Image (cartoon, rainbow, N blue to C red):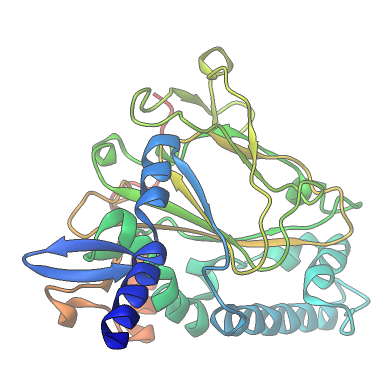
Length: 322
């Protein structure tokens, strides 16, 4: 009897924290609950608290820190910066270096520095367990992927610290991807508070309205006359949290008025086989229950895909403004 009661208790706890996905008779457990999935579908935005551990994120932070050190040293040797600020913490050093030379930011994005730690993180199990709840068990990493640094506003880096206007991620994808199941996964590498210019979103603006025409003036942004009448949701979050956004959810950020840099990763995942919306850049499979051999496991192969995309331009990689 005690064994039966224990099993019932275990099952009850398990179903609270995990939702089930059924595929050809198999059951896979995922981190998102049914309620969370429904919130994402209806609101187009969801914060998943404590989805990642320090062990998940620290290798990425260490890799970025090493890149910053190498870049700063090279610029100092060229006489373009004077102070390396080697004793400053991760969330302050980059802003201090950028204020000395805008060249500090050159090459600071995923597809340019192509680090092994970030490649491995994009296939992180804790991350993909959450994503699976939205796109299913056949997961491709969409080619639109960025490392974002938003330093404090000081002389020399105001353009980096400034805000981003209201836009939809559908605005940087080809119209052919409008029917694709693509989810934006935005996550901080530290704090992302209101003072630091956290994301803001308009919940409930999803597939019903679809794509809202954007303009290039003022940065890629929704035409002001088409902006929905909705109250912005402040998406304050912290290291280990994830923000999931529909490609139709309007979102923005305001300037960073703190004394620390807001670091984040801006990744997109999709159901394998769906149109990526950016044919000029490489996508790659990160999880497959049906065909696990199709997962791209080699870091160098991923690097080669990006090098080929840059050296042999083809396809489309622009923003949508119609």
